[in-house]
Each structure stands twice: as structure tokens, then as C-alpha cells.
Length: 284
Ligand code: G3H
Ligand code: 13P
Ligand code: ZN
Image 1 (tube, rainbow, N blue to C red):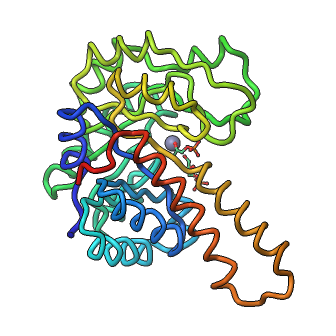
Image 2 (tube, protein in one colour; image 1 turned 120 degrees about the horizontal axis):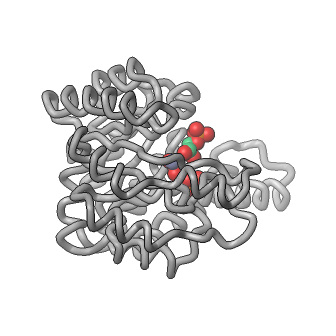
């Protein structure tokens, strides 16, 4: 199938009360693992590339890889830019064939975030590309800040209403206590805040930093309006553990294909499990 937009996959997710996984990819094996999992689970899928992924693999390679895989998958596939912080880079992604972009203006003032996000939405609308915005700051698990400092960065529900109305984003990333990277303890999610945001905004909501969030919290988030769920760290962990296991057991092997096969299989299992958890399995 040709690539589709966030609107195409999150509309049915909203109607059906489930979420669609957005998995980060950096190379061919990761793209294949994600799209083979989607095909086997009959699930819509969002494949996302960060600015780091684009610097690593090259913009044209990413687009070509995902388009090729999507054509074979026979399920709806979105190619989405993850955390685009640079307006020019966002434009290059749109021009190169991404069907969706995130403009992450979370480090800017509210006015500047609205101004630039709205511009991206206007351009995206003109060319059929969907846009995710971010309000509040979703940090990393490595950042050493106190609980009250963290909460100060959470998404304000009233601001969320204003932001969505002013920008017209197709999806909104919210800061409710998740963080990027491996958690040290159990993450404490602010479900009351999520509920308020949901009541005040019409846009589908996005959970970033979902690796390591307990299944029951993920389910609760979906009940409260989370429709896109971002997973990267759990794929990295599965890749590296399988690769290290294979190399340790087969120290004489010098065939990269043999080393990467178990890594790809392990990532595929993670993706399949998430698709079942999110409720998107069987929906394509
Ligand atoms: O949100 C961050 C994603 O995990 C991407 O990470 O910037 O290292 O590619 P990256
Ligand atoms: P994790 O790496 O914590 O799964 O977060 C992924 C993410 O939010 C990408 O934008
Ligand atoms: Zn993120």
C-alpha cells in the first residue's frame, strides 16, 4: 500500500477505542521487523524516524526503505518524522515523501510553539501530510530533576485546548509523567491530568516514552484518549540483547546476516506484543 497519514489511522483508532503503535526505525532490519510484525498482526502501523535516524541512515534511504516495505505489507503504514525541532528539516521530510511529521516546539515559548506549529499544519494540509505537535516537555529518564520540577513541565490542560484550537494539529503529544529511555522505577503517570486534557481537546493524544510503561497503565491511557504510542527503547533493548546473545554463543561467526537475524526476530516479537496490547492487532 502507499503511505497514509495519521488522520487515516487515528480516526478509526478513535472510533474503535484503541491506539496505534509508532515505532522508531534507523536501518533496514528495524524497518523490516516493524512492518513484518504489522503484516502478521494485520495492524495499522506508524513507522517513525528521528532527526538522529535521518542523520544516521540518510533521508532518501529512510523514505525508500519504508516505501518499499509498505508496498509489500498490505496494511496502512504512516511514515512519520519524530521530534522534528528544525522547521527546515520538517520541510525536507515533507518534500522527500514523509506522510506525517511531528513539529516539536516544546522548547519554545507557547506563542512561538503555536506560531511555528500552525505554519507546519498549513503547509501539511496543502500537501496532504499530517502533523503532530507537542505541548509540555517530555524529558529523558536520565534527567536529574525533582518531582515538582517534572510536574512544572507537564502539559497544562487549558493550554492544550488553546494550542489545539490555534494550530489545528492532527495529534498532540502530552507530558503526563512518561520519559524517553529506560525507567529506573515505575513511572508515575498523571491520569487525572490526561482526563482533563482529553475533556478539553478534540485531538488524538500521543504517549511518548512508552517503553517500560506497565501494560495496565498503557491500557488506562488508551481508555483516557491516548491514540498513538511511541516505542523506541524496548526495540533497542531487544535488538542488543539478541545480538549479544548470538555473538556470545557463536564467537566464530563472521556473517553479519546471521548476527542480525535474531536481533530482527526479537524486535518483531516486541512489536507484535505491543500491537496486541494497544488493540490495533486485527484492525487492518
Ligand atoms: O524520542 C526519541 C527517540 O527515542 C529517538 O531517539 O533521537 O536517539 O534517534 P534518537
Ligand atoms: P522510548 O524510547 O522511551 O520508548 O520513547 C520513544 C519516543 O517517545 C519516541 O518519540
Ligand atoms: Zn518522543
